[in-house]
Image 1 (cartoon, rainbow, N blue to C red):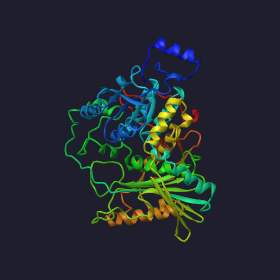
Image 2: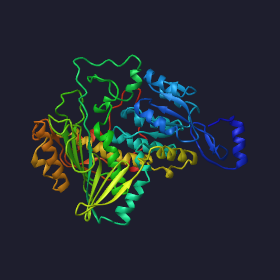
Image 3: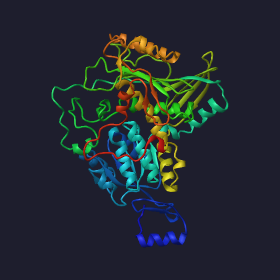
Amino acid sequence: MNHPSRRRFMKSVAAAGVFTSSIAGGRLLSADDANSDINLGYIGCGGRAKTLMQQFDLVQGVSVTGLCDPDAERLGAAKDRYPKAQGFADMRKLLEGDLVDAVVISTCNHWHCLAAIWAMEAGKDVYVEKPLSHSQWEGEQTVAAARKHDRICQIGTQQRSDPMQAEIKKFLHEEKALGKIQSARVNRYGVRKAIGKRTSPLKPPAAINYDLWLGPAADTKIMRQKFHYDWHWDYNTGSGEMGNWGVHVLDDVRNNIFRDEVALPNKIMGGGGRVAWGDAGDTPNAHFAYFDTGSIPVVIGLSNLTNSKSSKDTSVHPGPSSGYIAYCEGGRYEGQRGSGRAFDSEGKLIKKFSGNSGDVIHMQNFIDAVRAHDSSMLNAEIQVGHDSTGWCNLANITYQTGRPFTHSDAAAVEVDVWTSLVGEMENLLERHEIDIQSEAIKLSPVLELDSETQRFVGEQADVANRFMKREYRDGFELAEIGTATSK
């Protein structure tokens, strides 16, 4: 925004007799500022940020005034795009004063919450990429920070802004065109490659301020071949495929099947393995989980493996590769980003849905809410993002706490979609010459979640709850702001 002097600005507020909100950093949005630019800062200028920049550039009334990245090369490239913007390696410098009104956070996953909290404490509104959190506890603190500091905070599950979503909910719930929804399946099947395994630790590139890049994560040896992007497959900094893509599709299920009426499941069981590759990653490349919601059972299957040891194709599965299936009394609905199809009980296609994935619309929605200082306008408000990310965090915990898979343990859940998914995973692993009943494949017991405390209770609760909060590196600690019960 164009910044008048504080005295002149307050005179304009007094003359108008109205303003929408106060901001902790000393920034006010008055009626006179309704058509002025929102000053935007980018925290993280890598691959995802480039896409976000393209999309926010299409939103009128946005001026990029700040850029931050601990990688000098990425920061330099962003400065070439926005030569008038100020650049910083340390986000705390960007957040000082009134350089920016709002920030877009597209850092590594382990930075999302701390960056968002620092920004909101500084009086900035926040657009933060998915998954919101690296652990459930820090997601709770981010929600609490938004409430405490009265900030606008949107998560980057952009399909929430696709108008198609409303059509789907009308079709399934108001028209009840397929009858009662009986169960749901979520898919993320896409081939990836091994990230390698070094014999000596990888040295961070010279252009990177590694202390700032690492932030709250543990300072452990990096044994993968590449520094950037492949941090996704290291639980120290990433959330695996479950947090990378699973969050989008699980969010679709929460939105379209449950209409956000189910925040978190009551019980969960899951497992998988990182197999066939022998690389440095520690997140599963085959992952499967069951969610007991108290109503409609949900399962998720994720695989980065090819269909067999000799194949280059994606593994066989029902429904879309990145999407979900709602199994109903009168047929099924198959949804994915930007499109959907409904089939009757005989398998005949009866309706198609077409959308736009929510790109740009989602960014416009955020800017509109910032202008109005009205979080109720947001299509993916921070609580929504926290709940959807929570399903991913819990699914990752089932793998992290798993013990060697046995069919007898898996049989503790007697639900058809779970039994089918486990059978498919067993067949896929067999095609890679891996026995599902081996040390390579893990399975948790059924873990129960207390709805009030949102912590595990019962069998293996102590072990599972240790993954609800991470240890934070000195200088990058995250203080407790609120609890699950204080929202």
